[in-house]
Amino acid sequence: MDVQVTCNVSSLECGQLALIIIPSLLALSTLTIISRIIWSFLKNKSSVPKSSAVSFDQIGSLPGHRALSSWEMPTQCMLEEVEFVKNGRYGVTCKGQLKCDEVTTAVRIKMFRGSSSSHKAKEFVELALFYSTICKHDNLVHMLYCQTQRFPMYLVFEMSTPGNLLHFLWNLREGGPGMCHEEESFSERSVYLVAKQVATGLDYLLSEHRLVHGNIAACNMLIGSGLLVKVSGLALAFESRQTETETVGKERTADRVPLKWQAPERLLRFPVTSRSDVWSFGILLYELITLGAPPFPELEPSETFLQTLATYKLKRPPNCGGALFDLMKHCRMWNFKDRPAYSAIIKLLESYIHLADTKPLRAIQCMDISEYRRKAGVPP
Image (cartoon, rainbow, N blue to C red; front, side):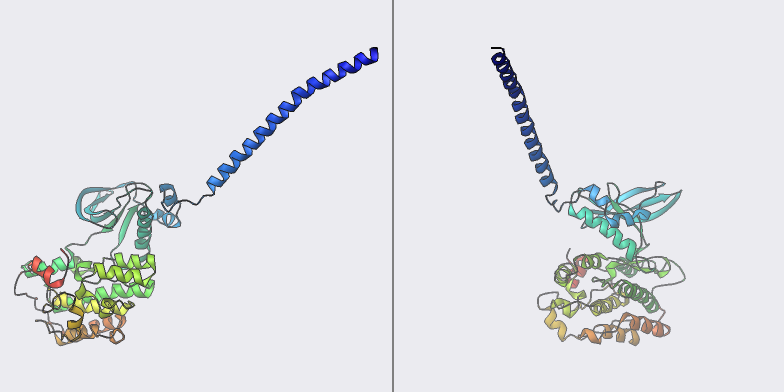
């Protein structure tokens, strides 16, 4: 009897123990499974590719951004008297004064307008890197500082006075001052000096950086004191480096560069070369010697422009010497292979400058802007 009672007690204790252990094990297993599911979900979520939008933190981690650290606006500098000039691809362009250590300098400011998560924010940082890398020549516009580590982002460029070369030429038509030096005036010899600086800047872009400017015209050049000229308007050069596809580049050129400045191969959508810019350089020579007259004034900028241009004979402008006129025609050879290289252009300009006339250039009438836009084919 005693043995039987002991066995019954042991069986009871075993049953109670099982009632405690088994539910505990089931609960632990459930928690383990749930934990694994949550962990797997979080892991898969973190591995999902991010969208093409770029956050401000991502911009700050770009290699290009780190390379711009030495270009960031110093804390002791500030922008003052900022005024709107025009709208641009990334935002607004303004003019203002840069004050650093009690020294004030006139500057041009390209500001970014958009959110930090936009693709253009990343592109704007790349634009700053482009200018910091490319513009290290005396005849290229220089970026002074930038702000890319925080918003608002902007680029600060040096400003030339009088400034826009085309407007400077028009001002001469209206009897404005020829040069910053009162004893000088803008003459055919001045055309040689200006043209040589433009060709030198373009030659640097091509030889050192393998870049084609893409939009050579007087309106994209800056002129300052002492006839110091700087090549500006590098938007197409930057975009061609970004896309690295000729198709996109050609489409954008056709949309944004007026017909009369485009080489025939560009109008025909053929591959663009540096000699395509040489054609445009020849048009720039015409702008200089005529004090900003529209090129090919007898031709309408229409769909038939290319056909009429093929048989058009360039007329020698007034006050244009034979050597300069020959160079203009050489730059305008129909076959791009027959056009001179920048190095040859520079040598020709140096060789013939002593033959250039020094009397001030004159134009018959002041420039009618609306008429100019119509004849030149420049959109309003």
